[in-house]
Length: 201
Image (cartoon, rainbow, N blue to C red):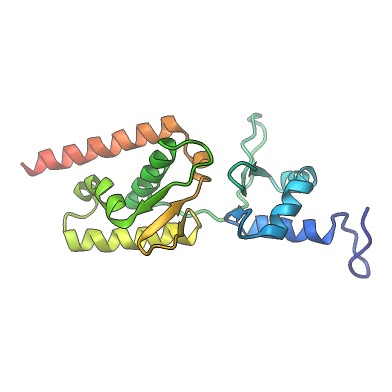
């Protein structure tokens, strides 16, 4: 039991842990190198934070090797429990999904803990097959690509490096897409692209 922080305070968490809880709820991602105080609270008071998050149907994911933590909706194994949506969600465009799948693929090709850096041109070329189902115009597709990358950067899934046009891929994607999902979705996009190209001929 901690000392009250104000008159009438009935909370039981320390101030540091409460601030970490707020940061986790605000999201989308906590990294050890960017939020050292929050990371310290998460790693020293993990079970208390996990319990508080469970109270609102959220689970805490902590990857100490990668230095990341985030929250996501619980996935009850009991069909009688219908967890209400808590976190804000946004639907991904086809292009955003394709980029994220490519980034997850790049992570899968690396060793755990290894930094993965991607460049603008190589990422653009890697997902160019999506043009057939997204926008056949080169200029229009490039604009959509840039907008999609900026959205992904906003959610800290890509972070800037010292070199302009090159980004580090967040290891959190390992927890969002498993290898089987990545393979299945990429195959489906390739199938759609081949289908579109066939209809053009």
